[in-house]
Image: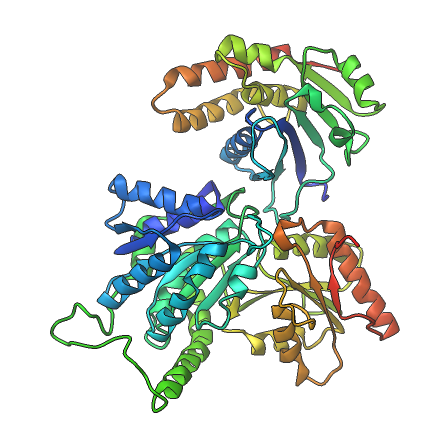
Length: 393
Length: 192
């Protein structure tokens, strides 16, 4: 049964967590994801879930406690944003290397400094090499759907990795949006009962976890994480197909929007992908061959799917809501450009860093990008391939 | 923006309930089967500071997530905000709904515009009479329904009552006051 409701992104994510009904949640509040933890704590207080809710004194402890619970054999979750994720940083790596299937929503927010509470993706980009699967969500619907699917992806025997579900702080987290939620029973059946392969509390099959690992095996263990990430690409697609059967909504590694005959493409994640689709529709109505590619998974990076989706276009703009200070563009730009390199068909790729600290992405900005791409195709020249959208000089 | 999407911009001051009104309007309209968005522009959150909130309403799913720049309808909760920021980006046939004791003609002069439709209602007095304190957000929803004719009044009241009952389970007196405020604003709003 489908149920159309009006919820904010945070409410949608909290509802997903209620339906997942994890064994343990350990969390520390931080804007803009505070509401998720706050609402979830009221579910605990009102007996709507069976969860052991652990109030901790910091995000470092939040991820540590979540990790401990997961290692013990529990389905465990946390939730954070920005500085909170930065403070979790070292524990996130450990959770990934211990192959703990922890699912945690991240309402994306800029990192200090200067201090700022609004949306960008610097928090998520800070853990892109931690070994965590990162899913991105265009709106409240996708944040909700990604949460449910994340459980199955994380716990899949070939994957066994943490999954973070990203959605834009304020833009998605605090905006009321219309979405469909599944009924509790459908979610319960979809995610199934968690049966950990190894658990510290399973006294019949004792295991050690988190042991010291020398140069003799550390390398192999790290490679196993790579193999799990590779497998995750297949699993994300499989779980997406299965989820389509219960929801009617399709999810893959990427969302290719009107790209089949496109000459120009914008590659962008989260809410800005929605705005780009809106502009794309208007330009299509004027006869321009434009499209949008939205990576849903950023880690693992779906480079095969991206190369396939973009192989026919002439010019691509990659939009990054984070800076790397490499002076070579944003994080997704590097990965997308790298993915297209072996096609050897001279696709021009430019980068736009946009929306840092919550700067609104205006529709005119996206129109300008397509217009720039049109110029690049006409002249065959790219003067400056790293650009800062709407930056005042 | 696309003609299919109706866009609304709320101008208020921190504490007047612009965000709450935008969200409640969205929830109420969503009950009627439409696609909606309701979101504020979060700035420094403090009492009295000018704030914006936005709605989009459509029969189709809405992709856009940027702030509303060219609103079809502008709702002003505080008449001291009347100025260039209120008229910015509004098309010729835009609708203005203003909480003020002044007449639509006086507001038109203040805004210095020729086109558009202007509606005024004394939402401060109405909320003081019906709710017991100055909280102009809910009465302005009544003015909105009258001014735009977007939805049948009875259906709107039924849905808004449902939303208020969810929010104020333990305070039924608040619900009655708010409903009365919406009714009065619906009747008293003046337009030209």
